[in-house]
Image (cartoon, rainbow, N blue to C red; front, side, top):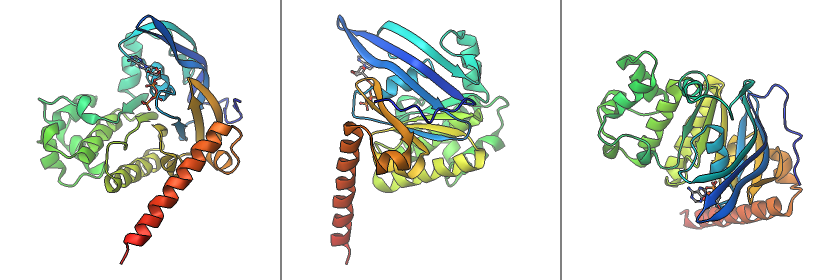
Length: 277
Ligand SMILES: Nc1ncnc2c1ncn2[C@@H]1O[C@H](COP(=O)(O)OP(=O)(O)OP(=O)(O)O)[C@@H](O)[C@H]1O
């Protein structure tokens, strides 16, 4: 069942009937199979679903960072502020990533940062007008203490949580209207996860940017998002306001995800209670 009630006509991003079929080892994988998806200005939207459900491929197709495999079919419409992104030129796409358009952060910042370049330089490169003060201000804004020292570091000299904040600083440098965050906290421990989520929430409030967050963690959705899309097998099986989907899921798959996640949270919290003195 697909519920598209949450779609707004003044959407910042409006995706309709998107299909991304991949050709993998001679077989067609329908990674994204007819998805409707939208994000309003300043909205926080979650995409949740089990591994392989198509969450990352959906985000990557939208921002044209496709996997390095054969594309058997790419169809549908993707509009960002009324600009058609499916047929946009690489140059126009670069400029959308560069200025007031969209940015993306990933689960593994180390894979996206240049290991041989100090992080301050990498942030500066994302700025229109590179300037040390602005680099330090961005590092400060994402909650990194001693921004000057961090700017002089190489990625491997920083912890996982610090590297993710550096990625967020790079993403913020172009003042995006929409930030895609693909499992941004998955590889971090619980305390650092919380700090990164708090940072995203704070930046959302102070910059008013929209966020599309991909996660398998319903706790993250409950905490951050206004609306949620539940994906399975390349399709959106349910979407709606977080509170509605959590309180009265319409699709058995969403209900099962919520049941498992609630049980997990209960076990975690009873463990915490037992551990308390
Ligand atoms: N580069 C690739 N090579 C082969 N298959 C791929 C590739 N990228 C995606 N797929 C396939 O497309 C489908 C959707 O994958 P995708 O990574 O988008 O799902 P996901 O929900 O983001 O999963 P995860 O949470 O594990 O990242 C899967 O069947 C996956 O195997």
